[in-house]
Amino acid sequence: MLSANARREEIYHLAVTTGLASVEELSARFEVTASTIRRDLALLNSQGRLARTYGGAMALGAHPEASLRQRTGEAFEQKHAIARWAAAVVQPGENILLDAGSTVGALAHELRGFEKLSVTTPGINTMQELAESAGIEVDCLGGRLRSLSQSFVGPLAEAALERMSFDRVFLGADAVTAEDGICEADHAQTRLKELMARRGREVYVLADSSKLGLRPFHAWARLALPWTLVTDDGADPVQVQKFGDAGVQVAMAPVEG
Image (cartoon, rainbow, N blue to C red; front, side):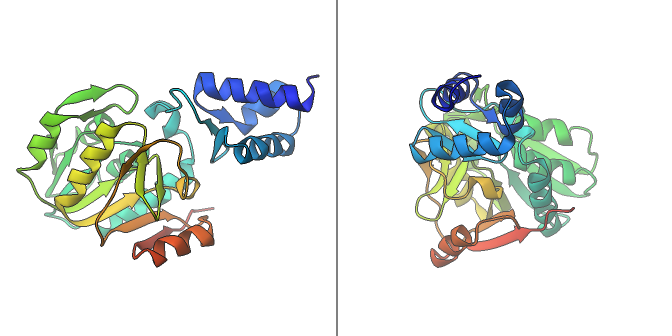
């Protein structure tokens, strides 16, 4: 069996090469308890080498961004609780914009039965969710395809946005802080999110509680007030207070079960 230091180095190597380390997978791989793995991850996090996520950790460093497929399975119940809350504020006849991402994709799933709804999106997963919804008109923001996020970004998408406005805009986030806004892996993403927010009457950022206060990347989208953070009821009260103090409205969706 590996020593504790060797195990932590191997955990870090796996996180760097795969983009995400799961507590359950690591526990089975190294034949130690989940509690031991969580202590390892906490130490690596305190050293600034990993960023904690729900159920594991994400490497800080070269190419740490997880794919959409990887992110879809993370914090599943939390994301769907957030999606249900967000769907409840949407009204028939509205024109809304759905960002790319796994949580916004869960919102698209919740909207499938709506009638007289107009949806614009750069996200391929949202298009797929709504493709057979007869009561929903879907417009695509074209541009350059980012394969990791399965979404379109760039000047073509930005130019199209300048000719649109929306009743509600729902944004996703890799992380979000009260001080700096939405954190993403790519500057083209943050640029597009800022433009999206400017075109909406009501702006919502959908982010499960594991993403609050994290700074895994160096690209930021700053949002003008007012906007609403929609997270789950497992959010750290300290983080929630920070957003409230910054003037951000916070809604916490209850996670069933």
